[in-house]
Image 1 (cartoon, rainbow, N blue to C red):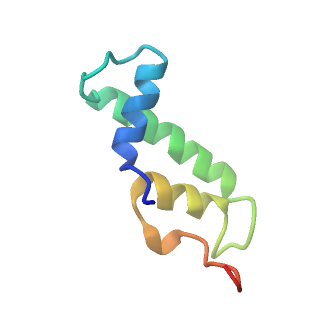
Image 2: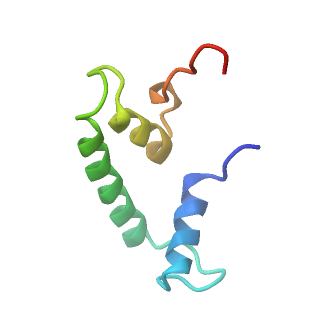
Length: 77
């Protein structure tokens, strides 16, 4: 089953913490904040794994829609 678009997931997280009410659209400032946090997480993840493929790349793939950066499936998966 495919995951929902990241924007929907971020809006639901914002609702869980009371930043948005049910049905309220994601504000651009919240989206920008989420983007800054994910960029910081990706920079931390850059320290783990190969230079060409690391946790930071995986964060970027998920948060910014770059599937080419997703980890390659392991044999047998």
